[in-house]
Image 1 (cartoon, rainbow, N blue to C red):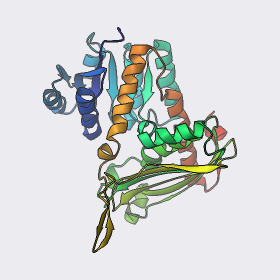
Image 2: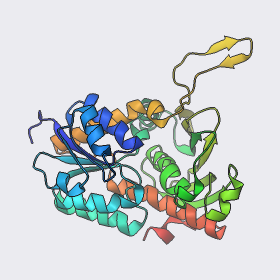
Image 3: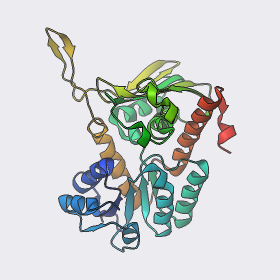
Image 4: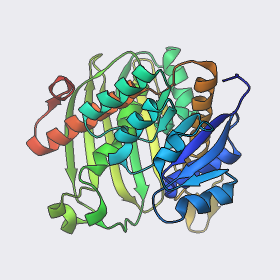
Length: 342
């Protein structure tokens, strides 16, 4: 591929987040073009492809994997299908962008990494906070030594409420495997050169107590101890009434850095009822710039031949923390990463 050629990307999974990603690739990502949409359900692929001007739509994944007009796939299908799709795409010689989580078991994570290594294709995983301007600036400040040695870290994800989902349709441990996994990666990103060593987790169904017997947990706090001595916390809730909230903080020996916010703009209204700000109600609004950044980086990695900025091994580390948190909830004890990551 010429460094000037646009990367021809096929979307796999035309649901809410997939449709958002396809629109960004088609309209806002320099160096990439939306070449196809695949989704097995009805006419979802055809409708989205027509809306965005993609030349190909199909209900069969194999159609995009065997097409010579596709360079890469963007996997936004349900999480439990991710590993098989990564492997199939790699074996077809397609570069892969996979939404998080790349896998839900370490064996599957290793299978995805091995397949892409063997095929020599780019594998990038969708940890979008690494591409948010505030988190980028925070990491740069940490790398420059401006806060000294990281000692205490914090990352949080609060989905907008009121939560109205059907708990019978939410896979067990979603709060760790699909929500907090972002925070686990963020903590690793903001504590460079170190590795998570021990995890302690608490979780409950505080928003929907009646759903706890179904295995649905909606609120969690996780402590992660790193091998450089830093102590981190990650927290999540599925029902922040004030809007979507993503933040990070690192306290160091010489200062502190924070990143993230819930407000849509920097406008503040001072009125008779107090101080008000407008907040984001969707992740695609709050993190729109981050999504564009990660897809742009993916296309650049393919064209340049450089490694992806967020690798399968990064995804494996975050998954290991998530699995340790699950075991900690089950046992009520701290869990060492080497107990789950071997």
